[in-house]
Length: 237
Image (cartoon, rainbow, N blue to C red; front, side, top):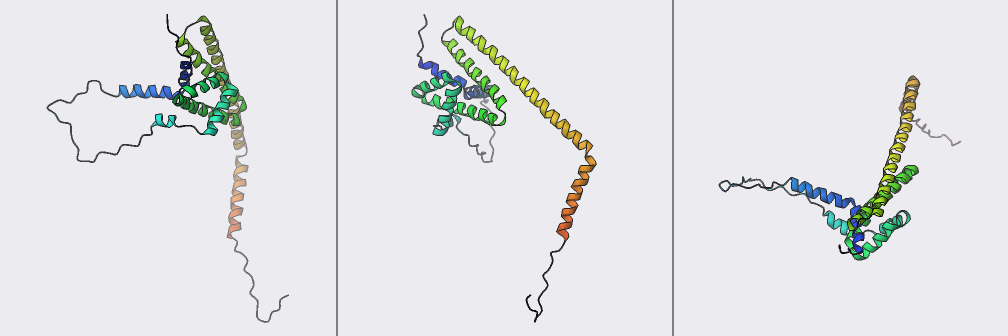
């Protein structure tokens, strides 16, 4: 019989939703791959020395330290509000995480804030695309939470829900691709119209631009009119 894990452990799984973890794993694997496993220096050979001063090492920003720093209250409030509006379960887990694991809370909140900012920029430019991306993010988040729950306990109900969410996410991604393709068609059509206009009005456009530049140049050439000096004895009229 397996012992039940603490409920607060589920909150820690929010870190799984952060790209920071993925990057950390990738960096760790990369460093291991680049380190020789059996590299040894022969006893009878000394490593080559150089008279040159050692090059200064570049300053490396401590990403872990940065991620642990408190986020600005205004951005924190915006991120929490975003979660409450669009993913209530995530907002609840963040609240638990803040009390039990402050550092992990800060990391998760920073990633959430980046997502919020990216999506809201999209909303300003394209509200329809924003709606699709928002739904995709909600489903991505839901998949990660269900995956975390499956590591705690397996049940047919959880597996069924996971499959349903994966199916919906697949369809939403297809919807996004279809939408982007249609937008590309519209952009291509505008390019075709502009190309046709340039071809059709080639001479007219060149003549118009030539006349404008020539007229501007002639205007600059004209000297300013000098005032006529007054002669002694002339009366002001």
